[in-house]
Length: 421
Ligand code: NIG
Ligand code: FE
Image 1 (tube, protein in one colour):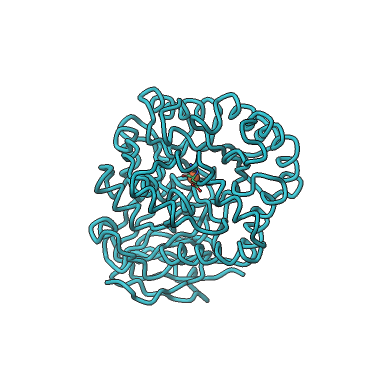
Image 2 (cartoon, protein in one colour):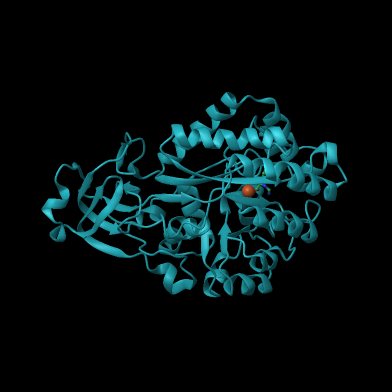
């Protein structure tokens, strides 16, 4: 199903135009701004025109539904390039323990954390997992998100990893959201392999990866590279197999301690290195000199009460920075775009323009999709985020509020009732 749509009278059009990651401050501050009245024409679900109202060819708008965006700023749909969308159960007690001083790693070492969610995920049916993931997708769409990455990693054995990825594949058929599936067997070591991390990696490479590839239900592979979780040698072995099998690579890197994860991600040609709270200067240099996107997840740092990743320094040193939610039931039970923008602009000293670039074209680049989505450019999907205010600057100024009036996905309009001013 595709749609023809004429979005007219746009007060301000933020295109984020481009087909590759934007690196460094100058590029990231260039959001391809067009002061209105502007228009976007979508034909058969794809952008056919983006520019001034005066330049619209009347022929092009024939047969289009019309959306009047008077007084609104229009941006590309957001790309949330790091989520753990599919999971069973919750960890509300752990969150309270952390608020009282327990650390994330100490809870994990006691058998809680990721392995807690693993037990719940293994125990739930596909239908149960799908229902909760679908609710999160709905919440994301209502915040202007049109592309989401979704990781497995709460199965950590053949059947349950496949179950999570099958849920993603089925949701892709049932939900308008574009979902990018990532296989993350190496998220933690399950109890049956406790203390035998190398054997667990062997098992994943021998049995789980081939089954994932056989079903064709993942495009990328991710690992939690961290002191006490998986080391560099294990990361290399696991990601080499994934690359050989045809998957793109990602890494959870330098989240809890400085572990030279960013350097390894750059060396291995990962699409992105994610978290980076503890990245070193060498790590920043390595990312700046690579094609690897630095994906920052400030809502996780916020929720763990850890210092934010040095986003300003990374951008000033030439990195391509993306922002993503990291939605998961442990370290960050939130997929809030408004919170991300608030944290990035108020606490990480990113400009609102950089935050927008980080959530659009750079998010797409973190999925290897910068030439396919993440900006309002001819030929890309008709994915738009329409906010209730005339300037994109309200996204940080009117902080932590959902300003999205409508989300356009492949030319279909999802109009949201006003719940916030
Ligand atoms: O990105 N750090 C590893 N993985 C997730 C957390 C998953 C969990 O705690 O359930 C993260 O923060
Ligand atoms: Fe994560």
